[in-house]
Image (tube, rainbow, N blue to C red; front, side, top):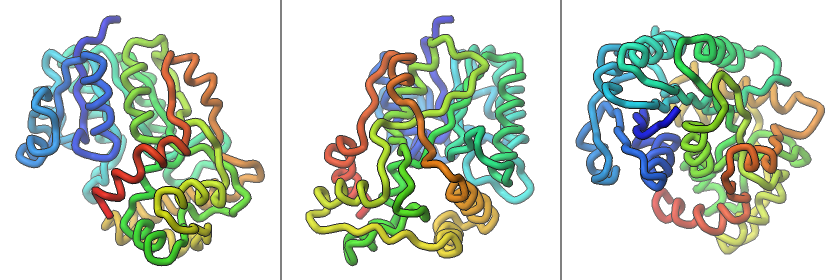
Amino acid sequence: MSIQSLLVFGARGVQGHPVVDSALESGLTVRAATRDLEAAEEKLSSKVDIVEADLTDAESIAEAAEGIDALFFHLPILPEGVRGTDVVDNVIEASVRSGVQRLVFSTGEYCGDELPPGEFVSSMRVISKRLLDCPIDSVVLRPTLYLANLVWPHVIREVRDQGRLTYPPFSEKRRLNWTSTEDQGQIVVACLDADVSEQIIDIASPEPLTGPELCRHLSRVWGREVHFAPQSNDNFADMLSHLTGSARVAREIAGLYADIEKQDKHGPLVDTDALQERLGIRLTPVGEWVDDRLGALIDLYG
């Protein structure tokens, strides 16, 4: 398989934009699918071919994917009445019609095999099976918690004003791997030609940390002492409801975090050494990401 072109859905967003950047750096032809052409033209490189398409409309996906070798997508916050399986079926149908060779899907949240079948995990397992059983070579990526969540407005505000990190809602003793979306971007591109068809791959960035250890990294960027003071899961759900504008999404994600916290062991944990060797890439340790990337994001969003 030789992939020369990639269609990215959500190309303006936290997950999609790094995929666009990594694909351009790798010399791929990149097409971005968006519902807002003007906003995409303002945000994306002039090297990107921007088209209008919607994951809830199979016909628009097929038109966007015409002449494209591979497609990356994740599930956005969906309108009421639209299921994740509907979106996946649209992508599969359109990709078959358009001759797409490989699909790469990100679950957007961790849903590892050790977790109980909660609402989010169960839906992702159904979606993953649908993709891996479809006629197109497909890869499912399962990231851990995103480092980009550290620039959520309430997180920035509390760290800046109070020196307090309340996310994630886990015990201070829980050690886990985080995932930078920049690393996910290069993982997506590496998966386009790697021998990973019909596989589920847990992904993360190196350097698993506890909450207090992460705070010590944050202190360097913020120039002040930062303490880990995790919020309750109920408060986390309330915050997510305001952030996403969807009580349903908030309930699913808060339930997922509650199930993670119930696990006796640390985690989510990923063998990032094996991941780097398998895909032939270098992933960014959390401390390095904080030093090199977080400050720029704070300037942008904070």
